[in-house]
Image (tube, rainbow, N blue to C red; front, side, top):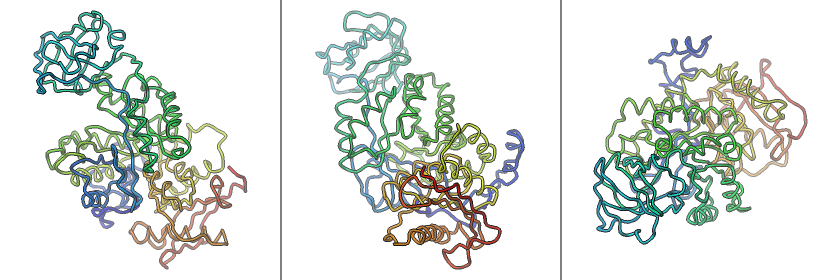
Length: 529
C-alpha cells in the first residue's frame, strides 16, 4: 500500500517475524515453532479490498478507510477519483437468473414439503404467488431434470424438481422461507447457456472505460471465451484495464486453468460458489484456485462473508478471524470485504480487524519452503526479468533485506518479484499512475508514483528513483540506516529491459545508499526481455 495505516506501530514490529518457524526443516516443525507472542512485520503485505455502499460512500469515510488500510475500492457504478493511488474496481453483474415480482408486492411464505410451480412464461412476471412464480431463464425447463435442485435467494430456499410440463416445473419445497421479489436463482451442477456478457454488463464495461477504472471484477466467468468477449468490449481504450474473473460455479471450476491463463487475476467468490457446489467442498476449491494462481503468478482474491458478523457487531467471531488468516496462508494476494463495508455499521473496525489478522497470518507463512516450491514449478527457460526477480527474492531472504526496490514502467518486474513471495515489502517506483494503482492487486507491493521530470542522464534518473524509494521507507520507519536493500532496475529506459540486481546498504544520510565492499551486484547482460 502507498500509505502506512494509522494503526501501524514500528515499535510493535519485528524485522523477521516468527524467526524460529522461519528456519524450520519440515512442515510439522514449522507449525510447532509458531509463537503466538511473536511480533508481526511492520508492513502488511496482503491487499485489502472494500466494497463501497451507503455506509462508506461519503468522502470523509473513504479517507478514513484509506488511512485504516483500504487498498482497492470495489464499486458498482461510481468513480470516486484518484487523489491517492487507490485502485478502483468495477464489479459487473454477469449472467444470472432471477425470479419475477410478487403479485401483492410482499413476501411469499413457502412451507417445507409444500408444492410450487416455476414457469418461464413472461405473463407470470408480475403475478408470483404461493402456488406459482416466474424465472427469467427460458431454457430452465430444458437443462433441468427430475430430481435436480433449485436454490433461490442465496440458497436460503431450495426446491426439488418433481415434473416438467411445457414451460413449467413442478417442485417440492425442500427448505422454505419468505420469498421476496426478483431473487437470484442457482442451478447447481447444471450447465447453463446464458450469454457470458449481458446487455447491462456491456453498458457497465463501457462506463468503466470512460471513467478510467483500473480493474473489472467480472462475475460468473465460465470459460476463456467470456474473457475474449469482455476484452473485445473494453477495446483499445480499455486495453490496460485488468480483468479479474470471479469463479462462482461448477463450470468455472472445471475450466479454471483456461480462465487463469486469459485473466489478469482471479476472485474466489465463495457466496454463489457455495451454492453451486456442496458448501463443505468450497475450502478445497479455494485452496486449489489460490495455489494455481500462485503457480501462474496471477493475483488471487478471496471474498465473501469473511467478517460477516461485523456487519452489525463491532467484533468478529473466532471462526471469521481464522477464515481470513487461512486465506492468507493459502496464498491469497488480497482479501475482500463486501456488505461489511458497503452497508455495515462498523466499516473502519472491519478494516482494522482484517488488516491485523492479515499481518499475523503473513508472519506464519513458511517463506523458505514456499519460495523453493514456486521456483521448482517455474518452467524454463525464463527471460532476464524473471531471472532477476527470483534472484532478488533469494537475495532479500539471505541478507534479511528491509525492502526490495523495483524501478518499473509497466509493473511487470514488480509483479514477478511478488510471485516469489518475499518476506519484505516490494517498493515499486513508477511514473505511471495506473501502473501504481494496479500493483495493489499483488501481494507485498507498495507502489510509489514518482512525479519528478526525467533527467537527461538516464543513470542519474534511475538513482533518483531508487533514492525516492529509500526515502519513503526511511520516513515510514521500515528502512533504517545500515539496512540492506535489494534494488531491481533495467539497463535502458522503457518497459521490458529489467536485468540488473544490486544489494546496497542504507547510508546514515536520509535516502542514500552506498554500495559497500560486501554489497553484491548481478547483471544478466544487456539483452532486451
